[in-house]
Length: 489
Image 1 (tube, rainbow, N blue to C red):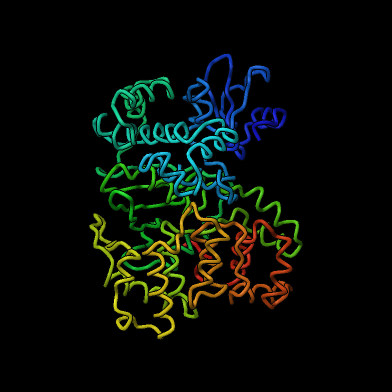
Image 2: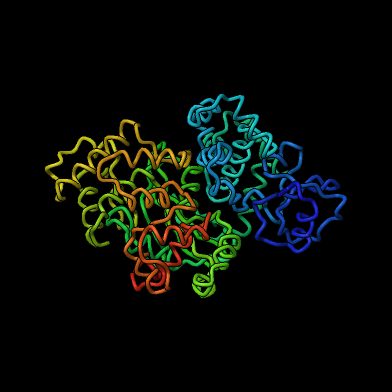
């Protein structure tokens, strides 16, 4: 979008927050860059130039606006709706892969050379993987500076910087303030928070309907791993350097996020996982606008716009839980999962006392005795085969997965039918066009709305909803009376 100057200028002049994250405005006369909704008086059009990413602005020598904090914009929705190599690379960078594995590790995961990855990112985003990762490190550093009392040296290494000098130089260059000045400014308006936790505000594009989003997570939550408490969804996180606990609370203008981490180097990954879980980088105006074109869906969209797809923080975990949920009730699926957690999950400490375990890893599940599972024999075979494939890497599920390839590999495993494959594609892989045509709730909604009742006919009818069929699923599910549709009290 940044190449359409006229459209960008109109968005800036109208301070349209829907375009935050789609592009960034660099002001030639001041040397700063802003998000489109910046509250200051818009500059003259001839003094504006537009970039596709904050990293591109920083690489061009612009510093972040202190009013609108463009580095905290929602991510571009493109990276969650596309399956090409650039989108997959951006999802990995957002997860902190470059910080942990470097550019060669990023390229290796995608099956390309480092030169190819750098060329494609530079062509589309105006910045290579190192610059994009550097911009993310700067934002992580800012969060730690403003929300913790850690010494600056600890902040630097936790944010992924290789030296304190690089940390200081980057913070000054990006924010036009020294790290100490950033902390002083934040302290003046900061409220109290629990020691050992990191409070954050996760932005999103309005509207956002929290009912089905948090309702689904709470209703299907696994005891010991997830809980709904005091108006917040809480769960344990298995992270690259340790583990953590995330507490997510819906608010009208943002999602409150309280993180407790055993290793602060996991902050970037934890934030990315929470945003992915709640589908916060979606563009609800584009999704709902397309679905409203169908006269049968339009009343559902108008009644409660802004539905998101409830996802997962761990694709492997969700795949296992999808198998446990085959042909049983939500309550039964929770019971089966809770037994696995107690028997094979690592224990964690929760200061509030409600969470006790991490969900078991595929390696732990692959080593279990199938006879210990209180499941039908065929389901045991499916579960242990799936866990083995996840453990040995023959089935890789992640933000960098090729959606079609992952589907093909899942279909090759015994017991993984269309419902399971599409559920994993929708909630674990994030495919916005995944469609559960065989789901009982979807078929009941189809009958009530006058849509074709059979999976084949319904799939053909749903072609009009592409590429947003996963969001259509949320609106169809909402026609039922299941607890997943209601925000818990």
